[in-house]
Structures are given as C-alpha cells and as structure tokens.
Length: 184
Image (cartoon, rainbow, N blue to C red; front, side, top):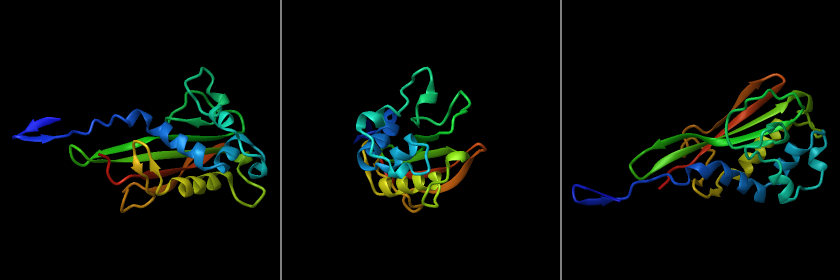
C-alpha cells in the first residue's frame, strides 16, 4: 500500500503469477479425464482407456527433470530437445499480462497442443488435437482458476481469445488463447 496525494492505493503485486500454469493444470487434473487419456495413450482408441489416477496424471507433468521426453505436460512454451517419439504434448503458460491500472490487469493463458501426426486420428473420426482443444475449452471456459480468476474464451472479455494452427510436421497442433477480464 502506498500513499499518492494523500490517498492510499493497493498495488497489485501479481504474487500468483509463478503459479498460474500449475493452477490451470491442477484444475484440469480434477475436472477432465479425457485430456489425460489422450496425452498418455497413443492409440486411436485412447478415449476408451480407463481414467488415470491423480498419481498417473502427476507423473505426466514435467518438473525440471533432466529428460523431458518422459513427460507430456509442461508449464512453459519452450523445449530444448527434438521430440522423436509419437506423443502428444500440452503446454500451458501465461502469455500476456496487460496491466490496465495499478490494481487491475488481464492475463492471457496460452495452451498449446502438439501431436505427432501419425497418432493424431482417433477411432471416432476426430483428431486428437481438436479433441484436446475442445476439452480444454469445455473445462476452462468460465472456470474459476486460483490466481487468475474466471477464464474466458470470448474476445469481449479476453481480447486475445482464439484458436490457431501451430507447429511443423511431424508435430502439428493448435494454440488456444484464453484470458480473464480483471485481476486484482
């Protein structure tokens, strides 16, 4: 709190910023089973597999280990090593922080899905990429995420919202941008 012309003002410190990626992933762990099956199982019938336990889901999340090839969920947008296996990857990280005032700002989260094209098609005539993106929207649109507030897939509420193609063969995918209206 500071005093500016005799008026006390609370400044936003964005103390939750380092935890935003994990908070989204944690929410997905509790609220969507299909995403985790599509990340773990490379088969065309991955959605028919049994649900993962929380321990199995947690084992897919990269925590800074030396070999990131054993993981499917990342809290950033970069990767040092080339991926040579037929896998699916989900990357969730804060893409943009727009400080509207000293107290309020908007946060845009970036959710990237990459899939080796050889395992992209599912048995139900859909693709793994599009199914994961749809599940992310269904689960997170309107969800109250700790540190972010309510996430929106809506340009009026979060100006950068949208889905776009990304990647190059063999790893093609989509990026989903979702944001909030105000953080205080």
